[in-house]
Length: 125
Image (cartoon, rainbow, N blue to C red; front, top):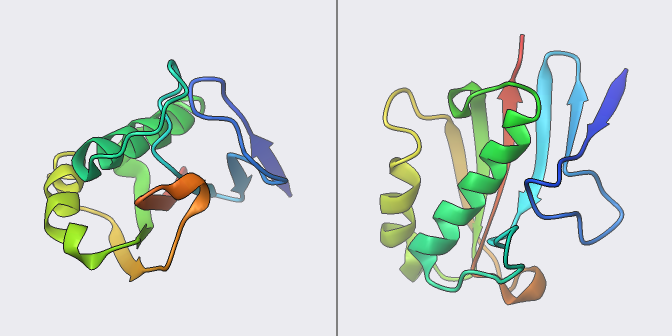
């Protein structure tokens, strides 16, 4: 069985997909771009963008009473690997102990002109 998750504390899906889906003991969080839920604006600075995305992911997890350290895997999409160092600096502040497994992929472009997108898998078991 699977169940879709939605919260107004994170940006609404901009297409035909769920913010997250629970399947068994895992939560699959759709790719998030750096949209500020309050203002609706997209963060352009890579550190601010990364921080906003991880706050949005945290808000989705909060809907399920799960902490950030329940994340076991992330996939990161960057439009430029030149942003990798600054991205890592912001990312690291959310995962100081036992960070999740991660893949980082350079892509040509992302929705709405975002410079970074992150999807995550959390374990709720």
